[in-house]
Image 1 (tube, rainbow, N blue to C red):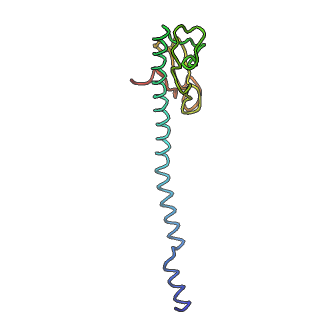
Image 2 (image 1 turned 120 degrees about the vertical axis):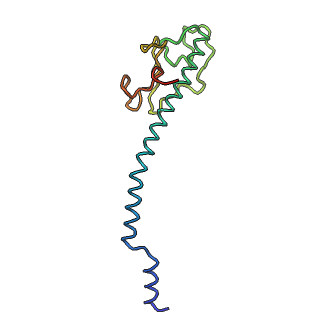
Image 3 (image 1 turned 60 degrees about the vertical axis):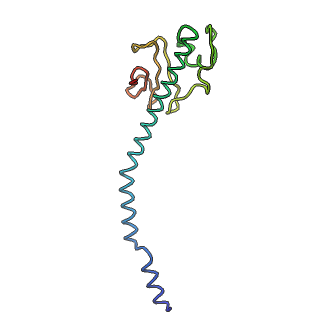
Length: 145
């Protein structure tokens, strides 16, 4: 083979700059469409996990009430599900075996007894913004059962 024929075969086998740019543009368009959907799914999964955690803690609080006659005080808080409070009469815990979970955004779940929203107690996550009392809160009073 002569060097001239070898160079022609190499050019035919390689991609041109235009072809590479077209592929990059197509990939960028696909990423622009797909990435926002994936990110939104991540936030949906966090909300679902917070709702699941609240349901689990609800069950543990009910077990605590069955054993002790009332829910933990606001001062004892959710920690009463992990360590025995001084005023607990028949504590059979720990009710949460792996300790208190953090919400999916890294904040502690909030608890108040008696509750302010028509339930015996308020149990909620401050949501993505970490500020209690805002519209993104995930709470036992606004979760559909």
